[in-house]
Image 1 (cartoon, one colour):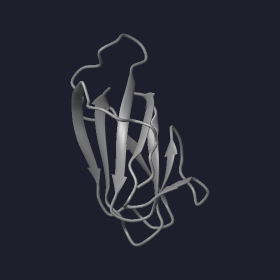
Image 2 (cartoon, helix red, strand yellow; image 1 turned 180 degrees about the vertical axis):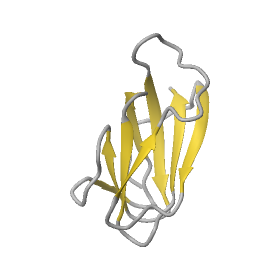
Image 3 (cartoon, one colour; image 1 turned 45 degrees about the horizontal axis):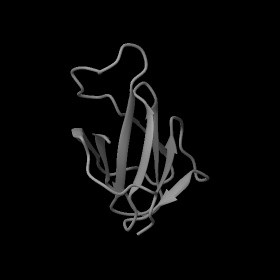
Length: 106
C-alpha cells in the first residue's frame, strides 16, 4: 500500500460516500458535501477525504478527471483535503470500480 503520510485516528467522521460502477474511460464528478446538514465554518470549509477503490481508478482533486489523472489501485489509500465546494473527479481504468470516499476531520 502506498503511504501518503497520515498516521493516527480521526477526530470525527462526516460520513461515507460510495460511488459504484465508475465508468471506464469517462469522468464521474463526486460532490463531497452531499448529505452534510451543516458546514462548521462560514464561507469555505475544508474536508479531508480518505479514498479507496476496488480496482484501478484515476483521481482528480477539485476538477475533471482524465486518463492522465493520478492513479490509485485497490492496495492504496489516498488522503486529500479540499474545499467543500470542489468535486472529486473519478475515471475508471479497470472494469467498473467502486470508490469509497470517507470524509473525516483529522
